[in-house]
Length: 232
Image (cartoon, rainbow, N blue to C red; front, side, top):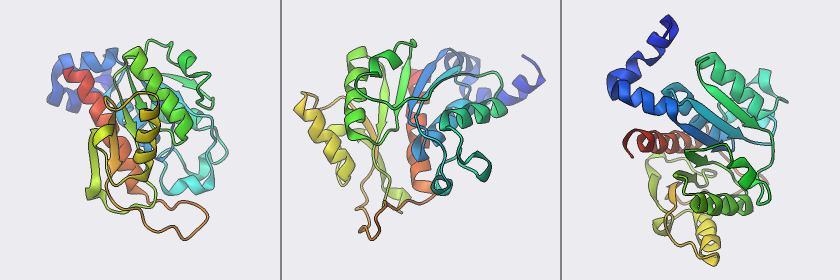
């Protein structure tokens, strides 16, 4: 290791030891969706020393993203999110390896995206159809993962929870996912990060969001996966 590597890893190694650093460096984690939730999950993986991260997102940064997405700044508006993620990752830890796919996640391309010898995954996508297809594929492939539910219209950070999809409550998004999964024979076995807070009444055409709720969900998801890598 060079001087930067020694400094970069020293605090993490003080917590998880050399073996933990080695486990993280061997992991290959996919993050599906680099928005408000996914951008925070992605950066936590980068800063923890995960060796290879696969990022998948079709969108570009918009001005409206700047209130909640870690990669969204004045200078990145109009830039593909996966490109922003790569630049930010290498500015934090030049030793990580990022594989990017600027593509909309859909049932017809999910299995191609899972050919990268992925060891773990984080589902941070919004589209129900794509989410269901991704969860189904990850279960079929036996890839450990966590799925993130909706964070819009919420303000209370104390209401964020982790549970199996079968035990989620108070989250309309999780309810829709649960119902759709049940229709294809999946009733449990899907870890979720979600909020039990009753969503605020919608008063505008767009869903409202605040800076910290998506970040807490994304960081929680990353924490689950990092602990999987260290202790599974």
